[in-house]
Image 1 (cartoon, rainbow, N blue to C red):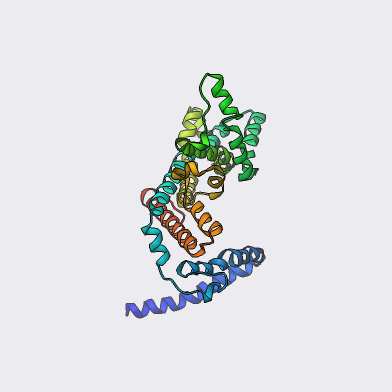
Image 2: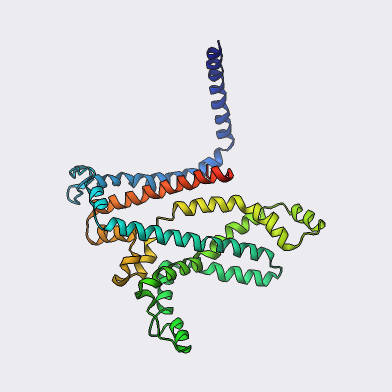
Length: 318
């Protein structure tokens, strides 16, 4: 009897759900029409080319094409996992991504909190403008500036070092300095732009909470600690999950422009290895296998970060 009643309830609920969904579609049809170009873009340019991942399981030849190239199975994955490159690349990518995440993640939050406390509008706008500027510069320009500033012959940093009586340092040619240079440049380039997200979250906090805190005698530090920070915690968690998911996908452009054969041992990551193997050596199948492995690891890390976040604080992406 209970199962029959449950089936009858499901039969009744399905048409009602469909009717409610159709009602929402009719109501929001103009907004959904505007969404069609975005959906078409992702289907055509994002998901459509994914069929090319087949070459990771084939001995791809540009003359035979994707479908006619012979199947190779997991040969390229076995070659990668069994070679000396895997350990080096995995260590460099994970270490560089982890250090960048841990060192750079707090800075946009701190900048947003400090800017929220500034009362001089002209000073606040000036800081915002100067901190946002790097976001509008291309990676090539940023790397050119880094190379020029850190030049051992005419760089301003080495000029200052020499002014104090020390020998110039070849920052981009020494293994010990590559990761600090990369991390500091990431902080400088992204801190201002990412702080916009936290400033928007702070602006959405109910102002009456601050008014009530003032009445109770709370100072600005206490209001920041007990109102502002908890108010943006959901945004912080979401951003941390997204950053964790992309931690292993270190952008190859900056690494490619800053590293050299002298720093390969600490600077070579998955993306630069894929670039060399795929585009420079035309080993497309092997490069696709490495790139697919990198994407799968990033997906696993994203899911793991979301799971841990849901377990600890009840917040997550889904």
